[in-house]
Length: 415
Image 1 (cartoon, helix red, strand yellow):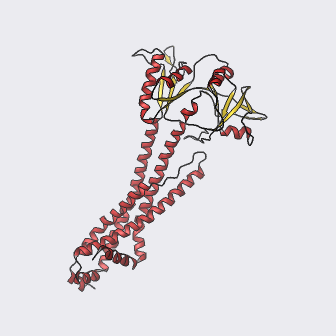
Image 2 (cartoon, rainbow, N blue to C red):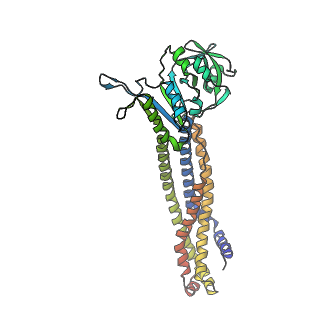
Image 3 (cartoon, helix red, strand yellow):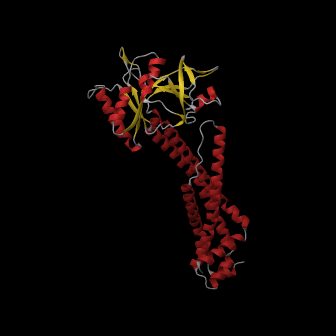
């Protein structure tokens, strides 16, 4: 009996009792759907984490000023004023693994335009490479230049939230807003970034030349900056970039070997990797729990196939009597159980994809700002399908083996 004929017989046998066959594969359907859904949701969570860290910047490295001691007590990070804009320029110029660097000077204040006012979440004095470091684009207008930095020009670039709150439908380019009573001409609007991982609006921001913040808004002539943001040329060169930054700053700040540096260097890669591991472990855990139902479905297939062997004992005897071999009977029942499992796998994958889309829609409907990405894990679907076939073979082998070993004479006597 060839394989094609065996499959036709198997389909015909399953079609004789459609309800029983449907109930048999229900456990496999639920298991495959659960695995597909859980893995897809876990992959979505992992992609969301990675995209959120990517929105922070391109291979971001943050350099903080060190802490200051007063009467033997350490005051904490940032209490000393050891970083300057010249340090940022030197990092970009002398460190081969650093793509760009920008000084940051933060301030607070209210933005006023006409009779409207709004308090931005962030007002930052930055350098010309800030957008490169943060992986940010200009949506409208332009960005300030080295000349603006050198002259402490009264210009600014604003986020989309500032446009909505102060200008609404008006074109902000060329208009002036006041921050701490200093008029600033709007020369550009940033691309929308949305909320970050903790729900803070990244578009609620005003960017100003750091020299303008220091001299005009803060009235200071000091050269120090609050933070320096740097970007490595690739994620694989993060460690190399960190080493170069530490070495260069130690030379510039005259830190001798064995002395504690007056700065700290941090990067977001390790945090992203840890969160990626956590989401990966959670995905594996959820998939493993969901996979238990596949085992339950396999047991159901074995039970039904055992019942089928008993019901079709006389049929088996007739086939053996007319020349069918034991391996033909074995192959037929294995094909039937595998077909049941694979049909359940296909239906389960479709239901899992629909469930993933539904869960994603519900999450995005209930949360504001952060959009959960829709990810269908085809790799998980393929693995689940292979596993479904393996379940059919594993749990179908015993009934098939039992059928193939039946005595044809005893089968023909069976009523």
